[in-house]
Image (cartoon, rainbow, N blue to C red; front, side):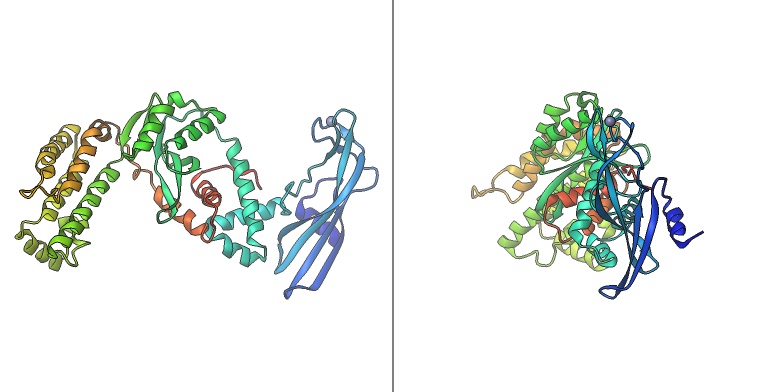
Length: 418
Ligand SMILES: [Zn+2]
């Protein structure tokens, strides 16, 4: 076997393709050697028309290059004249080459390798390691993900979890629509924004992939008015379950608000911010002692804290009946909490009254948890892959890159690669 043939069989080149020249440039660029494999086909070869597969004569050719996996430590390029066939029926068309992608300048194997690396490390780091400009890598990864998203089957989608997330704190929201799945969650769709129109865009995409928005039976989400409107308009057959972690979180934010107002008014709560975010069983000895001292001060924050604990308890109740009983206490609190004080000033507990009103309005959806056992936290790894996506997309402003990463890491897409 001649050296050229070794490369041809290592590349798995089908006829009429062959390696005709191997050029090794030891100097290369930036101290890295370059290996160039020149591929070609014999004169008079015929290629199938890309449309009808009929064997056709070559009309003309264009020389192109593809970056391939490194040969030892050397950058390796394939170069070939890519033929265009001339078909009686379909005219002049470029023939796809077996080793390469149509665009992007990477071989299939290299593309698969890049995709594997991108799942594990930030694109910037991959770019550095491979000596490729990162915008070129982003273009490749985005194209691969878009291809993989095209043929996804969504005909059996009946349950959804929707949860907004941001690329950075308070910035560039995207809303992923996730199917919880029997074993592993799958990101079906990601769209920019967090308003009700995200649902319309999802429905359209669902239909484009063989799904039917009216067949979606359950959707789990937070209590935002935007999501409710979206779900009611675009998923008319879906019953809403409000995610219990979001419900408890809302109460936690209420406690925070009460604490800030009370601290501003009395100054009695210095250094207690994190104390109120913990449950009693998680307090350290010092914190428990601090909590005990605070309990003797008749603080609104303490009342708010107990309301929050009560809600946490409801959220972990074993049955809807128990939860309903606990939630009932919130209704009573609503009256007391929203009453202005004797000077007519609004109560410090007003934020909790607001939470109570929200809970009251959403009681049915909150209690649905006990029948459906659906939460957004139940999607194992959902947050971890969003975090991972955020890290991979670091340094990239366009939300498109964040979306691409969420699909890549959480989409469980099949890529048409070796
Ligand atoms: Zn043809």
